[in-house]
Length: 534
Image (cartoon, rainbow, N blue to C red; front, top):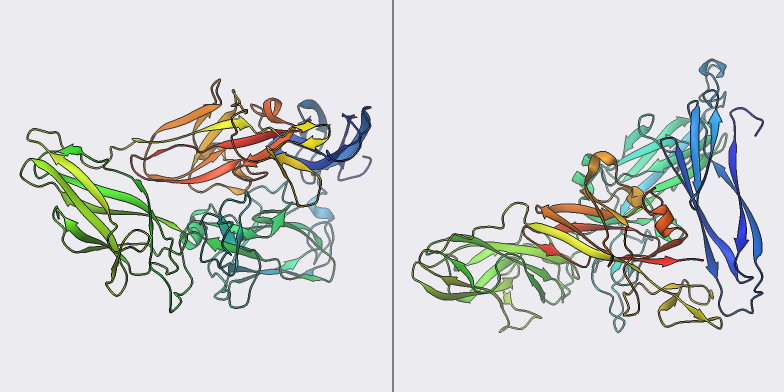
C-alpha cells in the first residue's frame, strides 16, 4: 500500500465447496523472513446446502512495522508468493520530537495488570461426569481433566516475582531483543510506565529460567484467545489513557494447594510401577530405588505426608519416608524409597501405604488393608540392577486422522459439536477403530516446559521424529526430566500434509503436550488427533 511505513496485506481467493461451509479462523505467524497464514473453515451439516462452489475472498493484513529491508515469503495454505521491502520499514529516529516516544507521540500513563494464583484443588484430575467439580474448577480444553476456571475469584492471591515482557506491536510480531521487562510486586501487580500511544504485546513467558523458578509446573488459565488460554495479550494504548486489568491467571500443577478442609478424606489411587517390575532379580545386599506413581483421589492435600512401610519384608526401612512435594486432591505424584535386597536368596515383598501429617496410615482408596508393594528375587551371582540407566526412558505416540464425516448433512458418531447449539462439528478426540495414522508428520521434542504457542526454538530442540506409515513416532534415549512434544502444523514440513484442518487432541487447537518423565519410564500414548477441513 502507498504509505510509509509500508502496509502489506494478502488477498486470498478460492472456492468453498458448498453453501454450508464458511470461513472460520485466519491464523498468521512470522519466522524470520517467512510469513505463514492458515485459513480454516467450518461446515454446518444440519442446514440445506447449495452444492455449487461458493467463491470467497479474504484480505489478511501482515504485521510488517519495523521490518528491515529484504524479500519476504508468504505462504497461505500451501500457496506461496513474496514481496520486497526496498528500505527498512520504520521512520528515522530523528523524526521523533523531543519529549515523545516512537513517531512523535505524546506520553501516556501506562499499562498495568495482575498475575494471580487461579485456585483449583482438583487440577489434573480426570473429569467425572457423575460428580460436581470442586469450587473454582472447570474442564480443561479437551474436556478430559480439570483445571482452574480462569476467573479472579474472591480470596485468590497474587503471585510475586513473575517476569512480564512488553513488546512494541502486536503479539504475532513480538521478537526478543527490544522488549521492556518488569516483575510483579508482593501483591502480584505489575506496571509499565511512560509509554507512547501504540499497539503493544504484554507477554508472560512461562518457560524462562526466572519464571520457572517461581511458577514451576502449571498452566495459564487467563486470558483466552479463541477460547484457549494464552500467555500473551495484544493491547492498544490510546493517547492520554491508562490500560488496567491486563491480567494473567495461573493454575499451579503442584504448588501451592488450598488449605485442607477440616473434614477431608485421605485416599489415593495406585497408577504405575516406575522402576522395579515384580520379580526383578537382585544380588544379595544390592541397593535399588523403588518408585511408584500415585494419584490423590481423596479431598485432603498431601502436606507433610510420607510413604509408610506396613508389613512384609522391610529391606532396610521399617518406618516412613517423607513425600517431598505437596500434592493437591486430583493430582498425581511420583514417590520413591531406596531399599536394600536381603542377604539370603529368595523372593521378598515389601508392602507400603501412606501416612498423613498426624502419622495416621491409610491404603489404596482409603482402605486400611490395601497396599502397593515391591517384590524382588534375590539370587547369588545376579548382576546389580541399580537405578534406571541414564537414557533408558522414551516417549512415543500416534498422530491420527480424527474423522468427522457427514452423511445427508447429519454428523457421524465420531463428531462432537464445537459449542452446544452451534451446529458446527469436529472430530471427537478419540482414536476410533475406523481411523488411521498419518504418516510423514514431523514431531519435535524440546527440553523443559512448552513455549508459548508450542513452537520450540531451534536451540531448544532435542530431537525430531517423523511418523511412520502407521502414524507412529518414538523418542528414545531420554533421562528423567520435563519435556515438550510439539507438532507445528504450519511448518514447511507439515503444512502441505495437514492444512487446512485443526487439532482435536490433546485439546482443540493445541498441538503440544508437556511431559514429566521418570527415569526409565516408557511413556506411551502421547498422541495427537487432527481433523482435516475441506
